Each structure stands twice: as C-alpha cells, then as structure tokens.
Length: 106
Image (cartoon, rainbow, N blue to C red):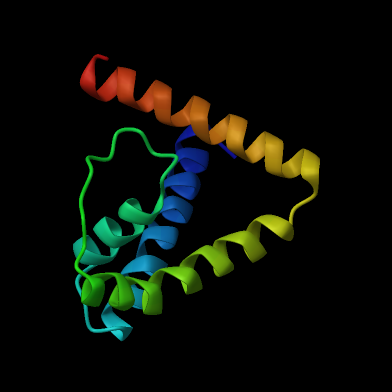
C-alpha cells in the first residue's frame, strides 16, 4: 500500500468510528454533539473539559446513554492483546499530535 492509500484507509477507519457514534446518537434521538458533550462530562480524566453540572433529570438521561458507549469501547479494546492496546494508543497519540502540528501549527 502507498502512503496515500494507507492515509485514506486510516481516515476511513477513523470516520467509521465517528459514524458509529453518530448512528448511536440518532437511534437515541439526540444529536451527535449532544452525545459528545454528555460523554465528555462523564470522562473525568479529560482535564480540557470545563465543569458542567447537569440537573438530576439530565444525569438520569445521560445514564441511559453513556454506559452503553463505555461498555462497547471496553469490549472493543479487550478484543486486542495488551501489546496491541498499548501500540494502538501510542500510534493514535502520535498520529493526532502530528496531525495537529501539521494542520494547526501547534
């Protein structure tokens, strides 16, 4: 495979993951952006996320959606060996940081 075809394959895979989240949001009757925000709120390790407080009803609603995402993500990761998991994370971090530098000059 050429670099161009590998880049397309990687971007297609990345976009496929985004489409899975978009399809899940649509099935639950919310926008992708709403799902993204609800998921970010529950990701306490993400320090870039600003503090947002949901009402009790909002928390209950998020609790009907987000655990399914985390469970599916965990099962997908568990399908990989520990070495593959580490390599995937390392490569994604490298790709994202390089892409950010090249695209945004950061």
